[in-house]
Length: 338
Ligand SMILES: Cc1cc2nc3c(=O)[nH]c(=O)nc-3n(C[C@H](O)[C@H](O)[C@H](O)COP(=O)(O)O)c2cc1C
Image 1 (cartoon, helix red, strand yellow):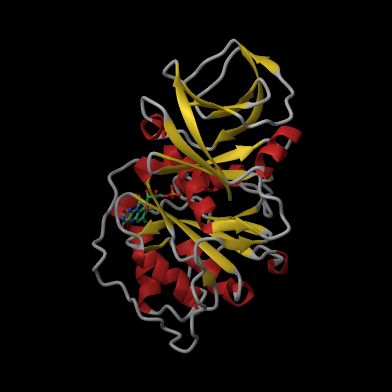
Image 2: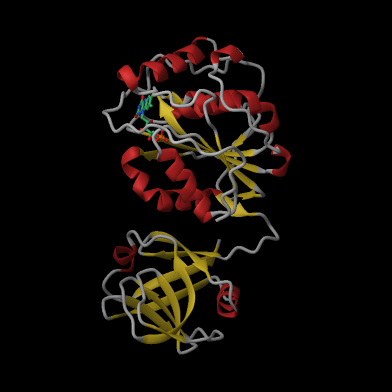
């Protein structure tokens, strides 16, 4: 991870675990583009390429911070935290009075700079970035006010960039936040699918952000992807392949569909794929480990094991649903490059 804070020290914001206000999606939200003139760029479909990436995040109670950090552990990106100019405000106090009035002011007059709360000034070299991922909480079915302020000020510099949106809320749907993002950055090339992470799912942020990112983004041509898609039992998984002679040789053989045999209730294996080996003894092997045994046998573990010599080929990013997908018996498994 290369997590580079481009700005001042991170301020510790007060936390709240109080019941959260939930506003219906079909509320009074202004959905029309107030600027009314600019044509949004075409949405970016899954598989779009990515150059240098900036992750911009704002967080009041810490969820967006966790999500941004999880994403940055999966990709190479710089990161930028947006901070309100006035520190220490409790947007949730008095039944969310401050947060509510900030959102109301923006809804009232979204095209006026004076509607947006001040945020700390930061200098961002947007020219360096092709892709920007925005990570923001939802407030009253809209984008949190400080993130709106930043985007309002920075819109012209974000024109033409590929933009991804990750939104966290307690339960409200995120369509209002998507509309805010497109209103605020009308010339952004938005990814066709945003990622919604409910507060209750934040503990799974690593898996959720990795799956969304890998689905939406393909590394720029010329950049060597070390990821593979593994499909079995109708479900797909992403594995990171080792940057080693073995890993590269394995990538060179893809796509491969292997009829893998069941063994010990924790692994599927298939002989007949010869790769350069560099064995070492493993005391502990985990579900998701993709190994080479004896120089010519591919082994995919879906349970823990240990005590044998292997060469590591790679590792699955997430093993959720893996044992169900592989099933109890022999199984056909497809490996392909991402
Ligand atoms: C002022 C305010 C308004 C909120 N409004 C909503 C809402 O309308 N619907 C909802 O599901 N969650 C709402 N929430 C909850 C947050 O969206 C949710 O807790 C989110 O995960 C917080 O992200 P953060 O920890 O990065 O600040 C609100 C929170 C605040 C502070």
